[in-house]
Length: 205
Image (cartoon, rainbow, N blue to C red; front, side):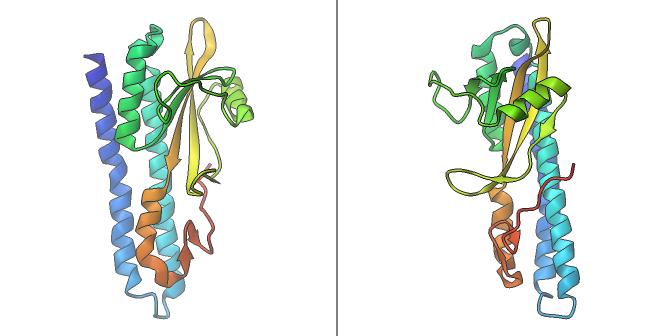
């Protein structure tokens, strides 16, 4: 029953997260027709603002989903087999890889790896250490995926337990491929992958 409640809440988050992308698409369609006019500059600003809203919304939903997972009864009880299923569900719903690490950065679960596979420590140990020290969620700057070069940001959420201020760190990768796909019709604006001039807008602090 608890598993179903988590899935239902995550489904609601997914539906809410789609709204800014719908708004962004509408702005992009209406502005594309005017890109050859004198309002070019204003159109670029309007589309950039809509894109920023979409990115911020995706990050906010990712953080909210991780916080929901952090309250999982299975995780609190140390039942990692059940929690692994919940994590896989959330990753599939949000189309975003997720992981569970110890406070020292050692990954315990990672939805991007096969079950039972040996997992390395997190690639940004200083990021994990900061989350553990502060005891609050943290969003990385926008980076490029090492494999395919696509823009992404990492959201880390601390999870207390076992008498520790922070026992676990849940992480989710916000991959912005869907936003890049929306940018394709704006080729006339001179945008390549990642926005005007190839710049990838970062999340607001």
